[in-house]
Length: 89
Image (cartoon, rainbow, N blue to C red; front, side, top):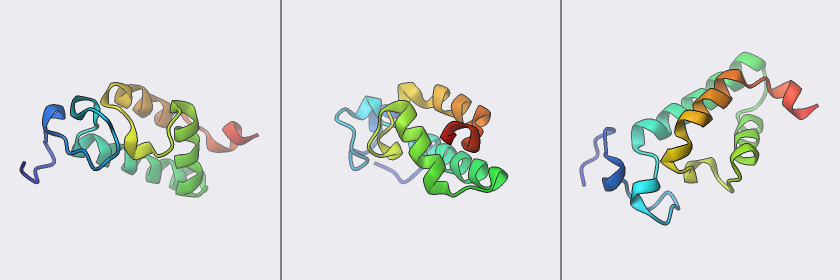
């Protein structure tokens, strides 16, 4: 397997905790989710840990890095629309 960020889902590595390689986020999707978490945290002046916890709860994950690829689009939408302070209150 190459180290390209454009890894196909079928070629995704298994060290992100998913049980099936075709369900794993590829490296580019994972980077996008991590970047959106950082952006939302910065924009709303909350910690990245808080935003990460919100997405993990929303998608029923122990770790957002284990998110299946099928949830990627919904996760992006969720993060774009997220207002962390409202979600916590």
